[in-house]
Amino acid sequence: MALQSLDIKARSATTTPSPHVRIEGAIPVAKLIDISKCIGCKACQVACMEWNDLRDEVGTNVGVYDNPRDLTDQSWTVMRFSEVEVEQGRLEWLIRKDGCMHCADPGCLKACPSPGAIVQYSNGIVDFHEENCIGCGYCITGCPFNIPRISKKDNKAYKCTLCSDRVGVGLEPACVKTCPTGAIVFGSKIDMIHHAEGRIADLKERGYSNAGLYDPQGVGGTHVMYVLQHGDKPELYANLPKDPSISPLVSLWKGITKPLMNFGIGLAVFAGFFHFVTVGPKLVPDEEADADDPPPPADPSRAYDPARPLSTRSDHE
Amino acid sequence: MSRWIHRYSAGERSNHWAVAISFVLAALSGIALFHPAFFFLSHLFGGGTWDRILHPYIGVFLALVFILLALRFWRRNVIRPRDREWMRHMGDELHNRDERMPETGKYNGGQKVLFWTVVMLIPILLLTGIVIWRPWFAPAFPLVVLRIAVLIHAVVAWLMILAIIVHVYAALWVKGSVRAMTRGTVSPAWAKHHHRAWYRELTGK
Ligand code: HEM
Ligand code: SF4
Ligand code: SF4
Image 1 (cartoon, rainbow over the protein chains, first blue to last red):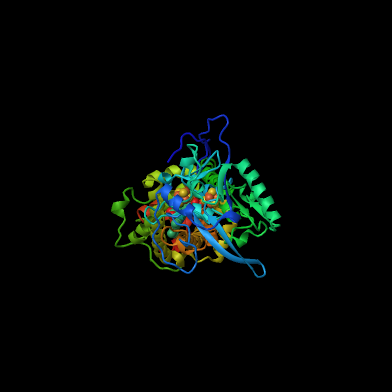
Image 2 (tube, rainbow over the protein chains, first blue to last red; image 1 turned 90 degrees about the vertical axis):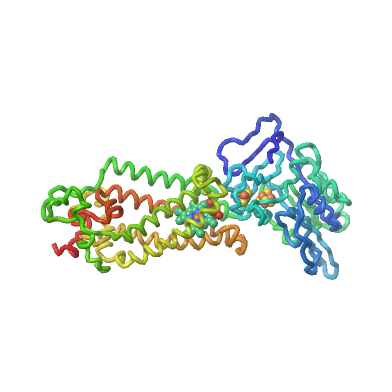
């Protein structure tokens, strides 16, 4: 769905400017998830289902709290539960709300071949516009956080929209509104960083000396950030990547190589054309044609007798 | 009395054109996703989604008919010393200094190199294409495999397109060649001039 009141910063597979007439643009927004405050109640998962009108299949219990087990086209956010002992004998239950990070440099958008299937608003939200999606799955290949999922129903890619439809009319995302402990907050990115600083200072006072903000610069920063008790070890949180960036393979695939390859194809065509107009066609010299054999008859369809072909059809030279 | 020289049977010609047509369709539908400048080509296939759906099936069809073609042609394409010699004279060939070119059999060095290039590239396209094929096979592979496969697929497709541009240009440039694949025949003079050893083999002259 298009949100005409929001400027667009980037649009997939588009080489012309995206619509951005507003003078100020939008203030970059961010959602801040304070893992130290999360109790794993999954109210945000329910709110997400409710607002976006999604219903995942009822799964089976596999002996862990993660439910559903993974992100799907119907579950754009899932709580991932990790039991860790950072200090010997001190069990910690780290619960991370997983979902799209809304990267400032989104690998999904970079990889997508379909114009306008992925857009990045000037407020930082990365949104999939499924009506333009062709179902190729390149966004999955491009995303450093393994977020997008293709629906089995319609073969379109889905993920968290950061409730762009709510944010566009001045509301906070549904998960933020519902969180009973205030672990998820939403606002301008600058405000969220300030808010996180307060939380981190508090955590440090309480003994989490490595508490920190997760706003990975490898993807240009994100518009979904975490406060981590163990900011030095994001992998503890269900393998949150420590220093994520768009894979060099993806950059190679979608970077300068493509224009260079286009240029190569153009060059080959032009080289052929100019070779033809300069050197000219390769002809059989007249004298040679006449020497041993007179020229073939004018109407070959009568002269050529398929029953008596000259070729021996031997396969050896 | 002179007769046209038979070069390709009806079966060989049909096989060649099945490969050629499916290659053009695979290349057009693939390149539509390759770069935004070419996305408009997806409209030839009914839009982006149809393009994405059809491309791999066209590719598999291409691979199948190409295997048949390769089985028919490979023996004639074994590279011999005189082909290496021919390759060394590429500059002369390109400047139409044909009198300096060594003798060739049914295929010259350039044609043989092109043949083996395509023999190598099509299986790579097939394998990497299957890996990135959604919704069928891609979900079974880890992300890093998908990333490598799609990169290889794009680069190899590019090489294939370049190789076929060379192939098509050569056919148009060397006058009298196209009818070998349309009618199956070439003029004796063409055969004698461009493929001396093959001509001798057929005619004894
Ligand atoms: C041999 C069997 C082939 C298979 C199974 C195959 C499969 C695929 C698949 C699955 C994709 C991803 C888009 C989609 O889902 O449609 C793709 C992309 C592509 N294919 Fe193929 N393909 C094959 C052959 C070819 C050939 C012969 C060419 C042309 C030279 C080609 C050129 C391309 C290109 C240029 C892309 C886009 C790559 C990119 O986005 O960078 N493919 N192919
Ligand atoms: S987390 Fe993945 S899906 Fe979300 S914006 Fe970043 S690259 Fe795109
Ligand atoms: S699946 Fe859809 S959103 Fe993802 S890259 Fe392909 S067209 Fe873009």
